[in-house]
Length: 223
Image (tube, rainbow, N blue to C red; front, side, top):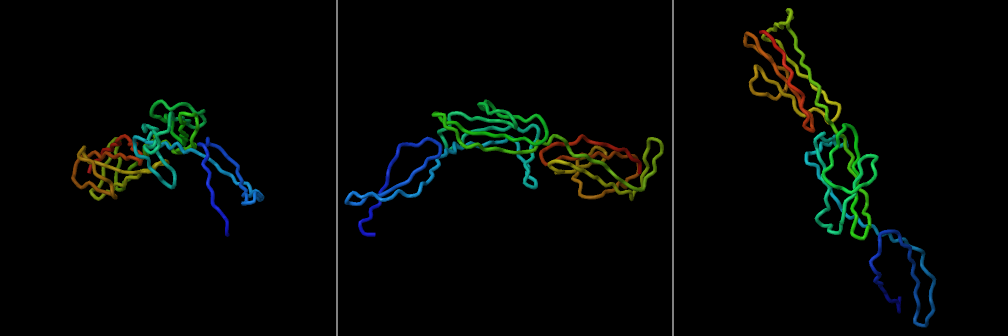
């Protein structure tokens, strides 16, 4: 439109918060038009922080699982140098000044909330990490057929097949291992047999997806 001019305005640095503004125009003869509708301007400072676990988290079905021994370090992102201090809250705690890596000493679901504060006291947005601490190793058992139990001795056939079964109610089973007569550990991939005549020991154990490992169980058999 003829005679229309664009204009800009520079305002001092605004604090975080919500601002309302509207504009009007004045023509060359000094007549002022109506104000525009009110617009809302929201100023928010991210004050970006990252949380770094010292052990890998395992994600399953949208849920993050962590080891009981995992520690969590909070630090500003390299692109944000305006952070003067970091505030953190775990579960239902109030926010407190972050002093050192965080440990979670109970299994179950936890929420770590954190935010940055700049030198003027402005608070950034609250971020959070929700995870499940898993401290219980998998349950494991062994099943087999073609055997005879005589008091404390178990006699088996060379064609007896041993089946290992492991279960874990949290992060899930990661690896299932067995060994015969204290030899090297083997990754379990299916039922196995022992054909060499005589006495043998079968050891077996399992680990979950956050590193919890069951104690070795051992059974003795005689082929």
